[in-house]
Length: 253
Image (cartoon, rainbow, N blue to C red; front, side, top):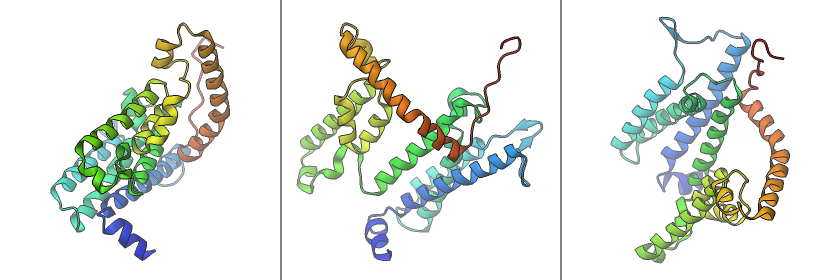
């Protein structure tokens, strides 16, 4: 284990990235545990308030992210300073992305259905950083040899083609495949060649006068969502907590 860590993490200078990822995940987990205890009225924890104003943990998260980011830029790639600021940055990013939905909606939607976006963004971020830590680089550059990397024209063409795959997958409504396809181009290629989702820009542009393709797209999206909707929600509830039930408006049943 020590040999693997030395060869694959320390020597390539990936220790700060590993520390940032570890602190990011750990901070998110600890934060979720605390807020769930506060929600349940257990333990010594409580909401932080100043003059009647509820201070969300995204605020110290932003501060830590700024300190860690600028500190990492100012420090050397190796050494105690880089490791320390990587940990600080990971902690800040964990606090910020835990309230990603709040930032997106500019509203306290932490325990609502919209709050699920925070858990999803954290999972996607951790997975992407894990892939980079494992040796994957954006747009398939890691698959190129040293001779190929010296050919700037070849590198540009490779990056452009892989970027096109990711863009096509995104236009077909496959956002997750497009995001992961930036790191693993084969994923974006699959998203680019498969049927578009019915509400995607691609479907609206190219399936408008193709009723069979539009019907196949709707049927496939229905079966996909039906198959994965439940398991995905259960995973999100297990990690982040179950959202509050939607209350009907006064006067409505």
